[in-house]
Amino acid sequence: RKPENMALLLSTAVALRFGGVVFSADTVDPFHYKVLEASQAVAWTLPYLYASSSELLALCRRHQLLTCAADTAGTPVSELPLLQHGLRGFCLAVGSETRGVQPEYLQGSTRVALPMSHLSDSLNAGVAGGVLMHALACAWGR
Image (cartoon, rainbow, N blue to C red; front, side, top):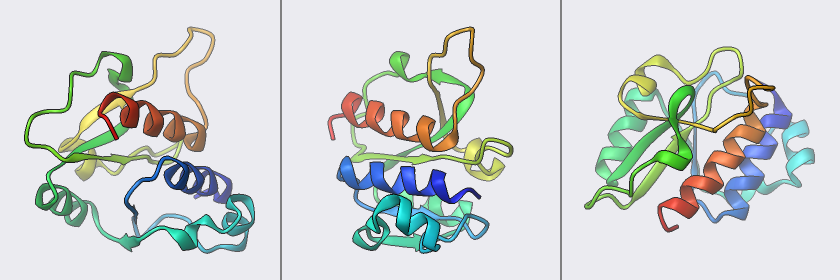
């Protein structure tokens, strides 16, 4: 729900050459002036769509993408196995700091987490999502 987080996530997706983004109905407007300003309008460069959790899960199955969700209780990204044979990539869902990823999507996904120092219990959603996007792209050969 924070425009700055959306701007960070969109900028990272563009920088890492992701194929597109999917927004839930309750997310901040990716074309909000604060998102556009903070991201230097990169939102205009990515294919996007709005979808429910069930629609996104179906889209991932259709395109042979592993569904992943940012979750502090997930498997540390450094311990994830290689991408399963037959999968063409991944889809990472990042929720807000307070609510996290929608339960329906979370239930059907591989939960991934960042290894964290004991001095910190969480990161900003935009920062954590960006780090996870990069780590998954490196680990799974984007």
